[in-house]
Image 1 (cartoon, helix red, strand yellow):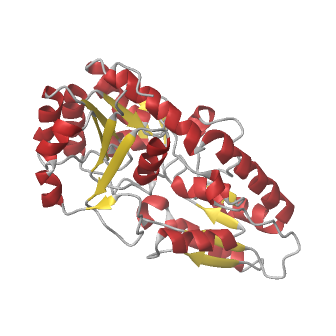
Image 2 (cartoon, helix red, strand yellow; image 1 turned 90 degrees about the vertical axis):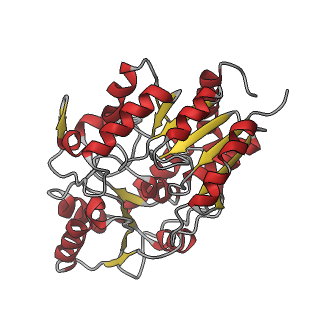
Length: 344
């Protein structure tokens, strides 16, 4: 049986697109990704391309690919008419929503059964653009994917109205790609806290800096803010850390949390109370929002054995719930539902 061909476009998101493509290829599925948004993170598993060059590939791609997996509400063409062209050609189409493309300014703060007074949506698309995109995608794509149940409520009703499914697919990580350093309970240096914001306002960086500065007046600690570095450079710093702070406003953990847990670090991130039960019960992240961050950090700074325990739990958690080899099987099942046939 000829291999199914999958095209991932047009942006890389935290290294996830390239990792999906590589893991699909390891399973015998032809997959390639393009990225027209290049930045300092320097992810290298997808093909860099100018947007106008990508548009030139549209007709060829429709003829030669079975399934189009789009990311973050972007497509080949700004007005998104390519979605209809691809669908009319009988190809499978998936839109993978990633965050700021659907995190509604209104729904993020309060919606059915939850509220979040901390969330910052300055980086989100405008309400009008999100509404327009979601109605269009729900009508024309085969299915949608989100990474967790924080994003799910922003999109579910749009797709349900058109009889389409929204799948929840956790982030991917290759546990064997890192070697967690052994925890050193008797370190000479004070514990190192690391925070790596890709968007300060969204991550709550000002609250993190404030809490760390307050705590530093009371107990010895070190703090590094990781910005403007390639992903490889940033990972080297995470490896040195004792505590990694992800984001304290959104209400769910991001890719940084997964990477830090895989490295055996104690991770701090705000988990919205109503979302706690949507994550596996063994999630070892210490949930802190701006109001509780100082106390949570103090507990971790003062108790190295607690950091070590959460670090061990994090390594196990990533192996169990984010292993790329297992997550990719879930994605393949989604592809098979969309295409209506087995692809392995």
